[in-house]
Length: 43
Image (cartoon, rainbow, N blue to C red; front, side, top):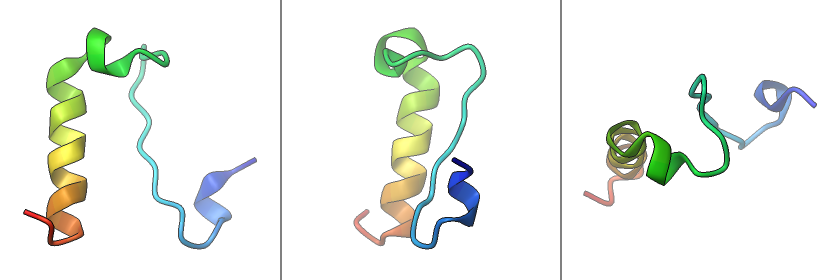
């Protein structure tokens, strides 16, 4: 399934990451979370 064609779904892909993104790439994880929170005007 290509999520880019699904309305209302926003996702990012990080190469070489598994389901343990927070442990494997914590800096990238935080950056993506902050970007999302800013886009939602939460922070």
